[in-house]
Length: 138
Image 1: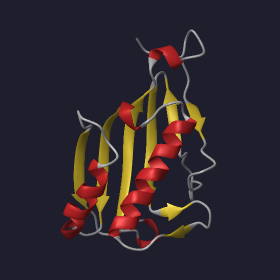
Image 2: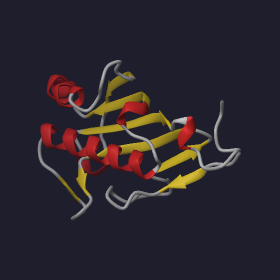
Image 3: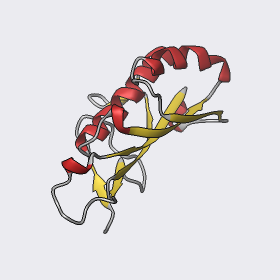
């Protein structure tokens, strides 16, 4: 098994030496997504809009890797201000079915592009989605 880079055209490009996501077996590790609109590479305004955009970006990266939001196992949410927790949580809830993924939420000193929120995740790909005999961990 080897790791494979995942690239989504409808999510912001990586702005450093990292991949949008990496697939290993039937797991996908998605790098932190912030509220950047991939059409203009600009950060949207406000915690509500940034949370929506970050989760949309996450969704698009997962789709490029043959997965979706239903397959997320774990997320980490990074907030510039913990006072934004309730608004972020309100938006976050609309993207996930129950049972919700495991999650950690932390306040950080600063995020790329001075974003208000960043979200990363670990997801799986259904075994029946695998195209190669050796791609899945069963």
